[in-house]
Amino acid sequence: MKPIDEQHIAEPGLVVLDITAGDEGTVRAVMAALEERWATSGISLVCREPGAPGVRARVYADILRPGRQ
Image (cartoon, rainbow, N blue to C red):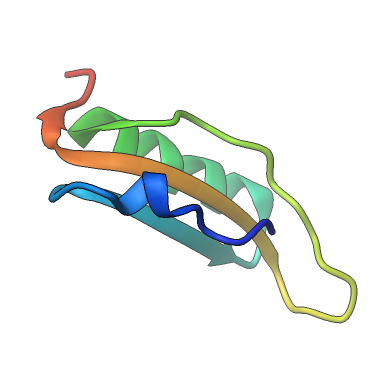
């Protein structure tokens, strides 16, 4: 994954979440749940890194703004 850019955490309430799970369905379910609660970057690409266990995804969120409820 790319390094975290300072603009993604430049204000209070902005977070970057790296999610790792055993399967793609679990990662997508977590991203969907986060999207319901907070304003997020949405469901992103899920990737596998050779030699690393599981699959990973990154989500950018603003925990001060509500999501889709």
